Image (cartoon, rainbow, N blue to C red):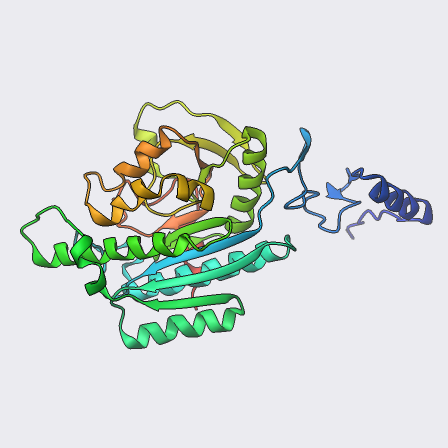
Length: 340
């Protein structure tokens, strides 16, 4: 039997009504396919920097507009895992995680760019010990992306006098930690020159297409509601489900978000927040703590940090690590979609 598809005629009166609604600032929703008839983006009527609309809750006028986003990515393809020898999920070379992280970031940025007009994007890569071939590959990916970027070849010797690590009776691990901490110091120094939001990223986080646009939408929406700056992380960390925690749940653009009191070192915040806690944050690069993110956790006791449900990114650690694989996402699909 031939299937008959329903068609909906879009007549002259409908077009006139849509134009009138646009002029008056109203939104029309086509209940036949749940598209936003009055919006140029049929999936959502929200406009970054102006308004956030969630069905059926209505509209929030954005008061905290975003002007720029600086992505500061720390890379090192020569070290698999800083403090252990276990293999990562998918058991690939470390460079493969770095390349896919960068590729996923660029793809997510390009999607976010279609929803924004007045936000300036820039990528800064701080490399600590990758091979020359891998560094050239990274530069090639960035050049092809057409986004503004900087590539910094970190000189570890410039920072060794500032770094104190916990004695591990293992020279290689201690050197790996010093390199990581030097990258943290450099990333925070660079953030002082940013104009607005800063996203600190490690090179083993594979981002979904919606990741950047959702985090930007959430930042301006939640900051508007709370009348304060916040922290945002892209990962729904599994280890936080093993603790008895209370959380506030808010609705973002497409995801639910909950407050958390802990995260790893990939997070987004504003220059205002960095300046407020700079003296504390810089100690993450100068003095090794146990656990390493103790300083961040102390800050989250005073400020709000939000994590998505489900996750917007995959942290590619070992399959048995409670700090890695977020629940209820398709790990393999996200991995394969971001192959160069």
